[in-house]
Image 1 (cartoon, rainbow, N blue to C red):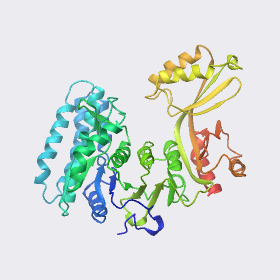
Image 2 (tube, rainbow, N blue to C red):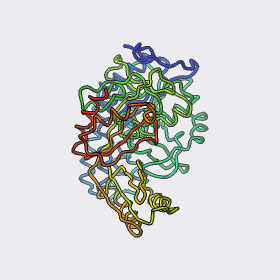
Image 3 (tube, rainbow, N blue to C red):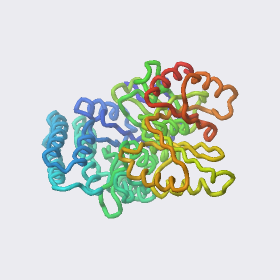
Image 4 (cartoon, rainbow, N blue to C red):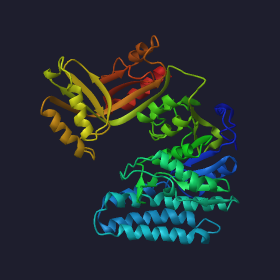
Length: 461
């Protein structure tokens, strides 16, 4: 088996040999016993991997979310039975299941007790509920490694992953994490492999928190920063980062290397391989990130680092659906100071994040990553009411954001010309260019998005 550090097609950057590797395995990579065994092969083939971060087994988090959504005990128990089935399917295939059987039974008992509360869950209880997926998978995966002869133990990441108390999307407290990691985790890593959980943490009072869906990647990068890792590996079910979503076109191909800036743009604008926040800790400490497939580790993958050998004009195309375009129009905006500040103050007070912004003399158009009528509507509707008090507001839904990611898109002669030539038959609702040298973004109707990406990819790649 080829190691990602030694794969000729994806040569690793020069790194500090005294540090070690953090490896994160996603839900499909720890979906069942066979998948966990493949991941064990990857770990045992590389003695530099010391800290392993795992997601919940595939399907478990969705079942936990379903439990959290209903107060019907019968429905909750039906979803719980699915979690039991996934867990026991792994447990039964362990040679020494008695060594972890009691721990698994205790976790399942705690989960079952929690879900039998005859009321809606509080935000804190929802985070506690969602934590069980990673807590179960980490115990099972540690035993898979132990049965292969590894010196390994499972570690509760809540001891070191300190966050604030914003349940559902908690913010990591970086300095506290570094201090707690040095105290509780680093000494263990000098003696053995450690398997821990992604996605979850705890606030200062010990309450369980979560970093939001996809937060396992972010957890791995934060822990990588805290232990001064040489590399953070993200093992998933695809062979690296592609030029676009392979489901949209068979011509999509794996990118051998990509810069932090480009990868951050891709993650922000819809690429599903990485959580958007993952790269922030890696960028702070200049830690290279490797993305590869746990099913095909010999196939190489994508290296993400500060410096890359190639900087093509076009690197990739990202797509993000379910976009809302809001246009705020008022003659009072003409030559008036403070109008935009007023608009964005309203959005900020309602905790609404804006992605793209374009302005004219009397209007401002901006995009949001969700739509009225969805779970987001509780915050957008009051904001719209405030905006309508002093301006004309138009809301357009069922749009998709397409981002062309590359290098020097704002200054390379001919780049935009060839791009717009490829798009001449497309009705674009908004174009944003020049704010970043790494992207050019535009909106199209959802129903046209897949075709646009496919045709654009053919023209540019």
